[in-house]
Image 1 (spheres, one colour):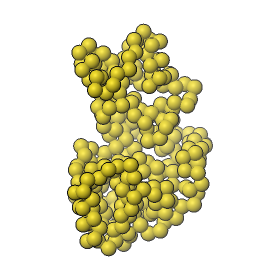
Image 2: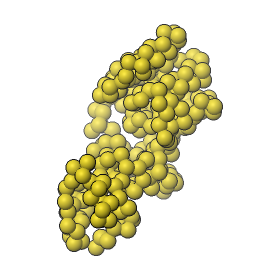
Image 3: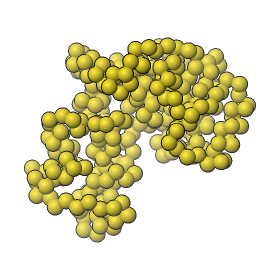
Image 4: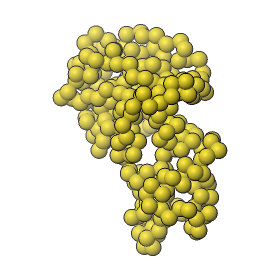
Length: 278
């Protein structure tokens, strides 16, 4: 936010920091330009700023849902990405984020299903609820164990946990855990999720993903729904160009707050949405 404010001030903007509860009324009332980390932009000139899965990478966009961002709509052409640059970039961030864990991977015969909030509700970008997604995994994957991992920082209702426990007790091949993302990514065969960052993290472990929701990194994954499960037959042969994709996604389509050109990248994004930035 500080760097964005600096860019805006150099173009003559007067910058004010408002609490979430005050931002909406103020922006609508005066037609001001706004940038927020709220779930949706505020006002007709509003934009959102979100972490792009990991700091220091950020996205500025006008759309509330990641699946509607510019990067999601862009076409990924691996041949347009310089291979050597991509490999250096990929190896650097792989080690920085996960240490040597991605160098010690195995396929231990299970599917990793990282869970997010709201197990029984269907999100706007999702093709099913998360419990329906687990049931689809059990139906489409007859051999491997399904390991569903609850997010350690989320709070789940009694009704959600009861429904998950019922599914667990009815299926011998389903195991429920909490957290342990790095170890599960290291040892799983592949990942099934809606749009969790864990699916993006799988790129650094060389683990393919099946997505049950629309998201920004869909280019490097397969997609499925309760009615269309063909991805499960293809997933073990799915090998996107991991390094080139990460470079394209972060270097080309995100703002790296650690780079010297960060102010220029911010200015470009603000101009993209018709902010009067010099």
